[in-house]
Length: 341
Image (tube, rainbow, N blue to C red; front, side, top):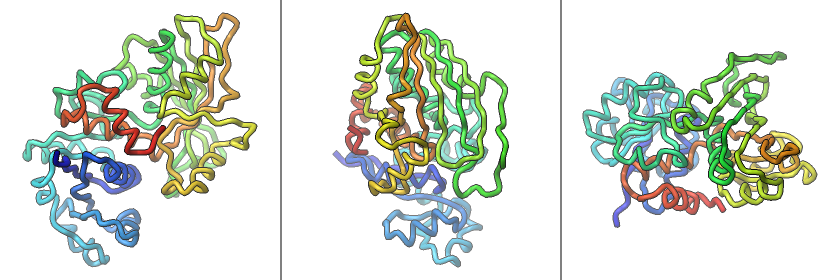
């Protein structure tokens, strides 16, 4: 069986990580990446020695890339003629414009969370609406926080019947390179519910969801306190067991030295994970707590904001191209190729 060819448009924080994830898949081929300027990720790609073909999204910008020593194989139209699907990871607002280009080439496409809701055919979650999305053409992904929330929600819903979920998110202010962003020495609350609840309800309307966000002056990951109200009495031991069985969730322990989000990030660097990335949702085991009735579960998790959306993006590729019939098959395939156990 020949590999399906994928284009990644927008080679930034998310695009570079999705590209690396695609390369690890045994049934997909990265046909090329497209961008418009010699950004630091594009420059680093050239120096890394990775043989990802680079294309220019805007003809007038080709000289800018070439003058910076970036080998440009062709223009975006050239790349789109060679592929089966597009993953758009451009700056918010650009993907909606690019959709018209992808339509011209009759290509299915996947867009990231920063785009306005409603322009794609559906918001995608492999856990909740994989089958529904198989007949669609344009999918939009969850944000990093909503991705982590959805994984945990599904485990609690499928195992114990999730009735209500409250998520209190401490959101990182900016990625490491975003020196133009704040705040400094301040915590910024947002109105309740935040967009994470509104997005999640699109795929799981049966779960009453409330989310609140406080932005904090940190860079290495978000943290969320989760409160799950379930219909079936359970125990901490059961919760630990079902979380341990989910490849996209990983339990860490405070007593082992994982006492902060920065420690988990540093651990990933020490184990030679590229860029310190992590695909799983880290959950601190000591924070898993149940009320007296055993039907309200509390926990605290980290969201590694830069890489966590990669597995679901690859699931979406499999969904739109019909590579796997069920969400279980799709996620197992993606997990295996990414090394998730």
